[in-house]
Length: 368
Image 1 (cartoon, rainbow, N blue to C red):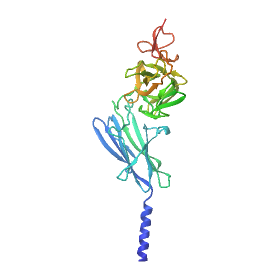
Image 2: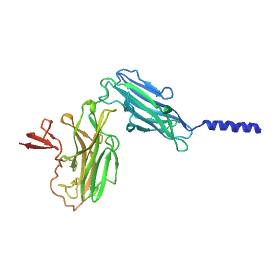
Image 3: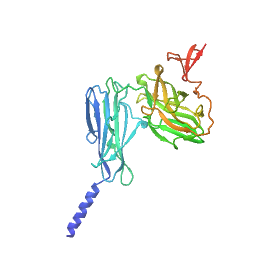
Image 4: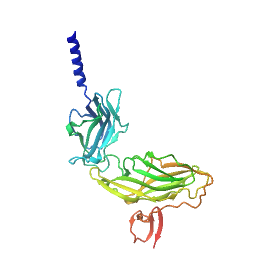
């Protein structure tokens, strides 16, 4: 009996020892379109690099990720990057995708019915590499990896003509648009993420105010150099609406603060800001009435075209009430940066020596 008991203990020790805290496999499900849509899964344990043989790929969409583990594992993520074949991935371009534990015992990230499109306009004829690895915490809180011995896993694909939907300019990712406000000696900052959705704000909405000013804003945009797009002007457009009616748009010009070109993604990244403006929102309003401050970020792109970036399909809005007894008067005017670019009525960029009708900061001037 003692021998049997000893044998059971030994077997239990072997089983326990085999239950290491580890990541055992990663499946990446993706959808390719080269005239017809095909969904596939890449199981990283089978091969380290997958070269797609599809011709004229116009869409490469991440659908979902499954990460399989053993033992006591937590904080499971997929880390990935996208870059040009033949070059090395940039340390700044890695993204982390968190996974959630499912009833099936594996960890999963689902990207919704649309998935994540990896191809952007202007990449026709290029060969891209999607490189990834999995990362988690073991029972001791230490990092563990599933990364092909440090070489990571790769899906390589070539892009055909007509790839993806065209885009000109868009918000840069995470928290890249912010407006700075102050009311009744309280400063507030409202930030928006790369999709134009309000990501965070400090303090509450304005509510009832006796003073209300716009102190400034900053924002970062990216645009596709390979598609022949450029940015020549960035501004914050705002208006005050009352009782369901729309007010007149005003303009605050931003100043370029930084510029960087990402060779791997074929994108320019530009940051703009305006500071210490003290634009009085209450100018021309009526004491005791309810209003809505509505605003949108506007970019002038190549050829004088105007592109507006907003919260989804709507302008960004803040409701407020002018406190009873507040003295407000005058007519609200646009704030124009004297260094803002100048355009002809045809939308062409003009210099200081141009004669005729000049548009600067959304206002028209006659220069003789």
